[in-house]
Image: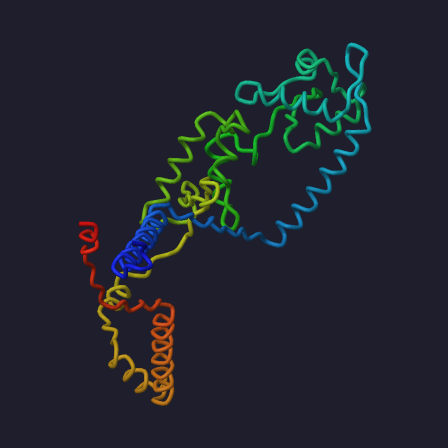
Length: 316
């Protein structure tokens, strides 16, 4: 006997199909809830002052001009060959950067290391490019040219670090530009990490200090996108006198209806304005509740079902 001719068997088949569909929905729902939700990427907006933007544009333009000149000019080597000035600059700066504690070097020491004479009589354009480079510092000496590597921000000791951070009010100084990293194998100076942590610890102190004592402090803020700590100068805010703070603490601020009555009494708000605010608030609450009800899916009403297994006795 086919299921189309047996109503009990047909009903049982429909019930089994409905149960399978329901089980499939439950499995899909469990898979969706088990999958970790993708976190939206953190949004970070960096604000830059107009003068900083102009300085960055001038710096980029100067770098472009220097790059074009470096690509066209050839530098003479001691072995008789030549190489582009850009590569010569890189070799000299790398040698100065690799010296222990960024020690200064003379013309002869540089010549022995890289095989290039940086004297203005031999390579005048290379000499001018080195003395104008932001990564090279000319050491004052009597009639002798001596150069040394200039680290980022020119920081060489704890005093220069404190002076730099004391000026970091609007634009902070990233910690990665001061310490040793993969991109910058050498730190500004030995022990800069300990000095930074000391300045941060001093910046957590709450007592009020004068302007001279604020130099030995710093505040660190971690960027959410790069996880780099940006260092700022702490704000030198003065605390109110103890008597004034005690008077403020003794004032009781009214709340709720008492606050509204006080505002009306002092003619800061009128009763009509308060009524408008109440009506606006009630309308907003009602709109939120209606939107919540509209977004909630309605459950389908399922009638009662009677399931039997009498069809198993059909073949007996």
